[in-house]
Image 1 (spheres, rainbow, N blue to C red):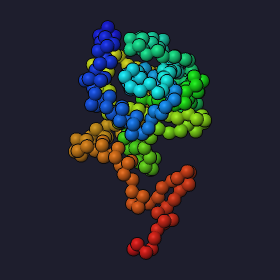
Image 2 (cartoon, rainbow, N blue to C red):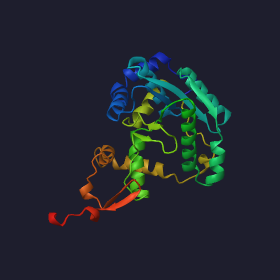
Image 3 (cartoon, one colour):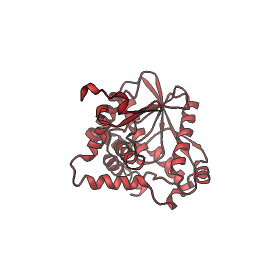
Image 4 (tube, rainbow, N blue to C red):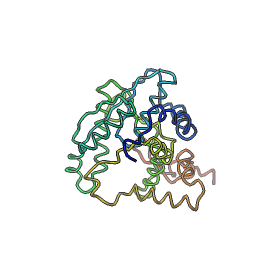
Length: 278
């Protein structure tokens, strides 16, 4: 959709509360309450990549601050990891149209990740970007960093771990940063399905950034895309299979697993086996 087809800002903002109230706004609020993502006195850095998820995340936070309890502060940050000038310009134009007061800063993440990681730079790039965002958030006096991972990211990560890493581990709604004291990562889009994010963006007329990495564009073999396709195929024959994958991480039965890891230490079911229960 051409840039000149962008809807007026007031209509875009109204659609969040009206058109997408059930599938976006309500689930955003539910995640914040259910996982206790915002507390009094928080200063939250909202990370904007320029993609569909982060643009929605920024607008949701703005709407929450406008109509909700103003018990927190916001900073909107965007890292330029080495975008082509036209990509950088698109990011700036979208934020300007959406009236997101973003602070854009430069980093050479794309170039360094490609040099270090060779044929498969995506994992290294993600780690470097995360660390850079933490540093910027800390510099701005924030205690939380909000990222735009959504429901589908959660279940795809779960399946990736099961099928490719031989462990059961999901993407958490919040976690404490290991290398940044008193910093916490939160994921307020945790319960929002990607399909509704796509619908919202298309309805808004905004043209979001994709990965925008010229290095990754030349690589093949991204397992996450394969997992996404697998889940879509499973949904054709198993009702609500995506919801079941998500719920599985909430309903782990310790009595029915062979082992688990806690604080870096592995445990076998034999460690807790009770002969009297036979």
